[in-house]
Length: 271
Length: 264
Image 1 (cartoon, rainbow over the protein chains, first blue to last red):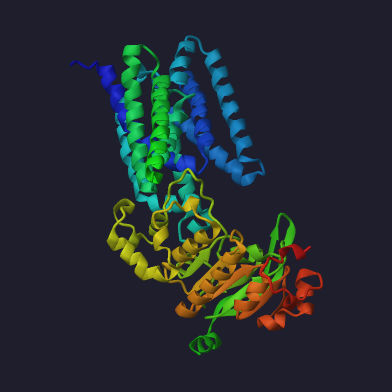
Image 2 (spheres, rainbow over the protein chains, first blue to last red):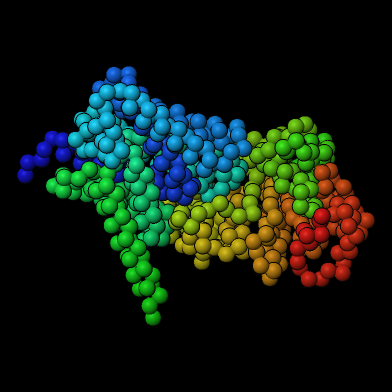
């Protein structure tokens, strides 16, 4: 069977980023950071627009940098002001989307690009993106695995983590940076609007079936892999954008996990 | 006898003229405190008296505006000293979406007992049993931490804090989420741990009846230490009136309930 090169690039990128999003997502959901992930994803739009404005052929770098800038701003405002988390994130989300839209409107010929970044487009995934996804999978995955105990304790109780000698503040910053890079890079596949689904749905589905954190992480990795890979594969014959295909595959997996979890419990308590 | 002997020798906690302002309000106004090694001490006071702030200073979570904290004869709470201490918070911030089991929670506190990626094994369970068998958490090992009752969670939290074999154990309102019969068991357990391991225990509590029964020394806090001494000395109406600001006679209260609501 012949595989088109663009398809191979997209599938490989999905297979690299899907498990990574599933892994990091376990901590994102437990630390109630889904909205944070959504905010840095939306901030990427301004980064994309800035990239085009600067005349760059590939806006990946400004996209990641602008998302990191917004992530840093969220943390800074959280520490320095009395504003609530939700307020800070809503402010920065809407602000950066507005900035991105204004810049794109001023530039000519880029309106068509908007859809690609909003909903994901496998045709826009280059070999450079696939290679970057592999590098991010290896580095972010290794750091997460290396800091697993500390991250789990931080999630359980930040003061307890501090007392156990974990540099809570730096771990928090590091986690936010890794999450931001992972999310910004996944935008190629899922688009700004739907990218959070790959971070949130796999751990939620895994939770329905898992009986320990170890199982939850492994299942979430696996569901991220199936959801992202399956969605990309489906999007080509159906001629649909990859973002909605991945998200709907993940929603399907979530429903199956919900039913599976119920069956598991019914079996467990059966006489 | 051994505990008494040690207590004469060294101070586990020394606080001098500690001042802390939070949001412009003075919360601690010159706290002086000396807790001798091997004692089981209760820090009591009404809501807003600065108990939690003082505890946070001892844990290095709150920087004092002035004054000093010296722990275990070494210095202020830093990474080296914190390793020799245990801390039991009121509760965890755990979301039910996080499937951390008791076994995994204990493993993350002591990587020695973790195994490859928290893989459960009999060998690890045996190690845990050896370290904290007295706490009887073996039957809870496979349960998710987020699904434990208040009493079970407290047991697990103490268990995990004992894994490092601390010399000083700090407990913050440990029975806040525990039902009344559970409270009595809980304090018995702490007293047993204190006796067996000969560590210094500092209990922050507003539960006066339990404190009276188990603490070897009581400090009453209300911005400053208003009084300190053996439980029977401190629990007289005058000193408690200073701390809680009302007339209060603990001897008439035989039922174990919380007296925090008196403190306004």
